[in-house]
Figure 1 (spheres, rainbow, N blue to C red):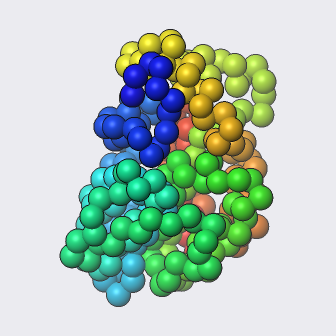
Figure 2: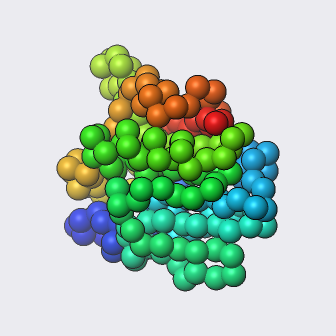
Length: 215
């Protein structure tokens, strides 16, 4: 992506590298997800990655059953193969995801309109088998304006290692109309309202965090 080209999931190249350069400690997060997944996946159930992008994380999960990756960006989706199915579809179009032992949403729901998130979270809860897990990673905003300023500044310094100031500013402008982040507390409330009562945060860096919920 050049400094003048608008950011778009439909046209971006080297997406996985771009994410790793944008989110601090991203590789540690994906390693943790792979480790946690082994406690929940069973052969007779499916594993789903909502907003799977290139499918790199889904491919790493050591699941012997069916794996499904869903994303709306056709530019990112790989070809389906063996027991792994990739589907181009808007998450808001689903009424259910089927019998699942593990569902991932890694920096995906922040791009879904606020009003549609409760229904998607409820469908996720309904689709999980008893004892199944939902792993949810999101960018969040701080409740304190002062802390928000500090954390955003530190994140900017991190991104400057890989991007120019112009590239960072342009991407923030391009994402402004499509990425709407909640506070951590608000996300917890949404999860609880969807039916999740057992959950904990297992990863956090700056204004990014990941939770695991068990049904």
